Length: 504
Picture 1 (cartoon, rainbow, N blue to C red):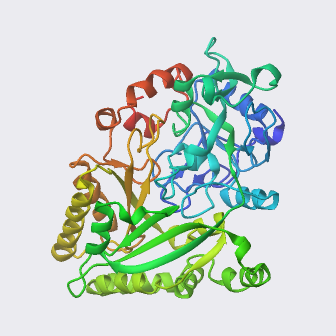
Picture 2 (cartoon, rainbow, N blue to C red; picture 1 turned 90 degrees about the vertical axis):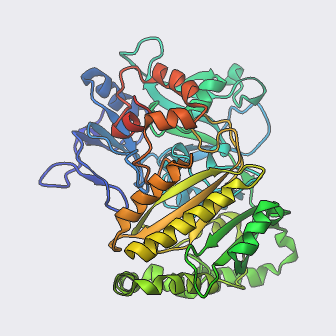
């Protein structure tokens, strides 16, 4: 390994320090490395094996959970950011190999130049691809699913399955008809085409090794038309119960004011529809993209764009909420109403990106996962949650600072995906930092919702979810653990987070 990779990052009196994007997690590792090749990662993992030192990888640090916390050898993957076509596929499709440290905005930009687009993503685009996928990041699609559904192959540096004292690199894929790679002309890391290995490795938050790269199946560039409808929660709930709200839409997500204002609860429904861009005047669209769409790119709303760009506006909002807590229901109603009648048409990844980066990096949240049962009982649980939030507001004057965000995800066969085996509704519960009672309301929401059998997003706050809870609520837990222990026998890929949620 070259000397540049042996050096610690000097951040705090000559010692390495890493923080997540919200500065709520600080790590002081023994070693801080910045690999830029698979060979570098191999040598760093071998050091961890030889010295029995835990090894973790970090990217942009968007996670609020303790998933990235590693106090042994910490690998900063920012230099692992290359992309290229995958040459060994045994089937037709648009396959690109992307290194795990590439940021989504760079991935989107590079694919755009080649005429391609990813199928789905979360609301912002500064996460590393490995951090996003391995913690179960999702958009809102009952037709496609979470980001993990794009993954067709994974390159992983881990223990040698035959000699745990050695580091080894494997390419892990599905088997049979779903296998991607043709072994007869393949050149690269040892190929393991095993369904259980693959379903464990996709969402494993680093517990199986260090992700070097993925092969993603992407789409030829497509265009989306975003439409917004301001309505009320009662109307939206009925459309969700009979599922009519999803008819003929590529994706749907909903914002709801959890607090009543003038005896109603405003809701915003956002529809994304595939659109044939050939019927549009491309010269006019290009002009709009260059000026107007760029101006409102973050949220399609000028006032929220300004709030995202000008720090003093966010601090003013924090001050006002803390000083006048009774203002919150009206504020959230206004936030919803201000977004009405704003259609937005653009390339897929530019529409999926929802912006407000500055604000989101000054907020934290739980993200609740409820099963979308046929009877619609999950909607009753959402009602119970909102009644509880209204109780906390009235009794203790503590609040959420944003509407609840409801997103809907198709079921998956990935063992630790929260949507394993069932369609689910994700419910985002954001709180700005420095809001009075923020930590308390986040904790109370977790306790309230776990008592009702919900799950919590791996990358968001989930401090009340332990191994016993995961084992009883994730039917893929035992299958995952059986595979993970083969790849992580020495526990060097374990950390405080995996010990709590996996018991390993």
